[in-house]
Image (tube, rainbow, N blue to C red):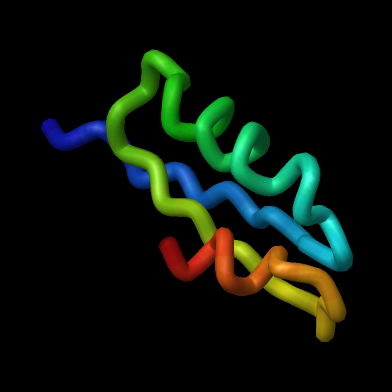
Length: 53
């Protein structure tokens, strides 16, 4: 039986200093079947650029 897929929602608004660390923290989890859904709410900083990388 395949483990269930866990979705993690990450709302983002002008989070440039934190968004990279937040993504890394999510991806470091022991559970392997994760998807990250990041929702940028019109940030005016480089948050979207960081998420796209």
